Amino acid sequence: MAIIIDAVPILFPVLYFLARDFWGRTQRASYVTTIGYIFLIIWSLITCVNEYREGDYGNVLIITVVLIFTLYLLTFRRNLLLYGYVPLTISIMVLIYFLLKIVDDLTHMLTYTTAVLTYKMLKLTLGETIGFKVHNSEIFIEGIRNSYYFTFACTGFQSIAIITAPMIATQDKSCIRNATYVAALIYVLNVIRSFLIVFFVERLGWDYYIVHTVIMKIFSIIALIAIFYYVLVTCKALAMEFTRISGIIFRS
Image (cartoon, rainbow, N blue to C red; front, side, top):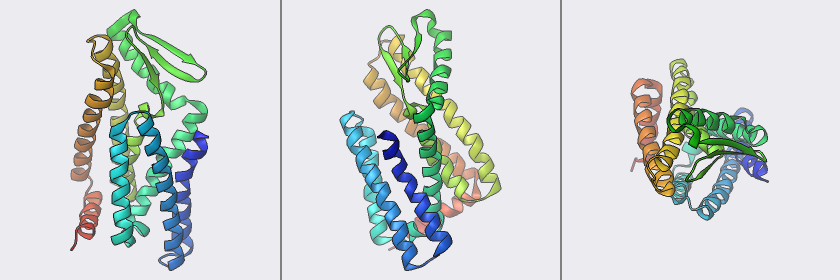
């Protein structure tokens, strides 16, 4: 069921590329792309409900803000979402994240690799108090105070997709090359983040919820803002696109 739900957003790039390559800037193309956005909105609403049930209110807030902003643009700046750079960026973002997530749902390869790297770092600092377990395809790092369950969300590929997709969509060679370095940096920082969560709880006795949901969420946001600022400064094509888009969004 989870794989089916994760496949829904992939309908957006399929419909967008179909509309772009077959009909261009026509009424039919706009209808088809709009249907693609509807699929993204449906997935977002389902995810928002699931995140709320799991108590991750930070993600609920982020998804809600994105939904409101998307509905605003569809109402008042519709052409921005239907043609050109923005839908191309969203298509690349969706393909990076959801194709990898479906692969991981089937193989658990990315989640397993992230958990193993985190475990190796913990063994160097916490020694024999840390264990590693795979049970019914579920991956855990076992501590004395807590058991840490790893999912695809722990891999950092959501952040990688969000940051690198706008770079790739510029179709500028230097931006695309830098996207690979940025992806590697985000992945390494995410492994360090996972390591710090377990370390703070196991060694320092901090509350897991505070560390995982509050402190590390703030750490992730600050890190992503810093990385994205660096990307804007070093990738001129991306900076030009953002200047153009900002002018369209905030014009009177």
